[in-house]
Amino acid sequence: MTGVSEGAGISRPPTAVPPGERGATRIADRVVAKIASQAAREAAGELPAEATPPHATVVVRHDTARVRVHLELGYPADVGARCRAVRRHVRERVGALVGFDVPEVAVQVERLYPPASATAQGRTR
Image 1: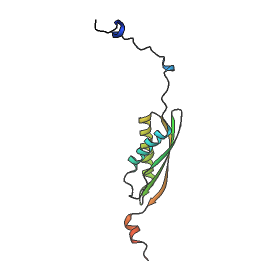
Image 2: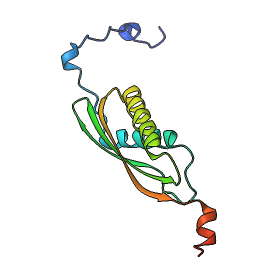
Image 3: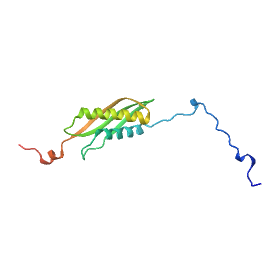
């Protein structure tokens, strides 16, 4: 005998737990906010060097996320088109990565930055 007990080699199949009793996965609001922030960075395009990166706040209820993105942009820019792109991309990424419905993405433009050359020269009369 090698010192192994007789029942040691036998394994039992795991007991099946009904789906309703298995528990649930909860994704924290701050995780969804980080995903939304990253998606906004991807969609916003090139930002001025002094601009703060986009950040998001999120309210999650059941499987629905409402997102507010805060954004700083360079000027002149097509603000409407850039905001539409951010809304669309945030909705797609949060939906794809988290599986939530995103009925609302509000984009708030916090600041517009003029071109660097315009601020360096100042005003002329």
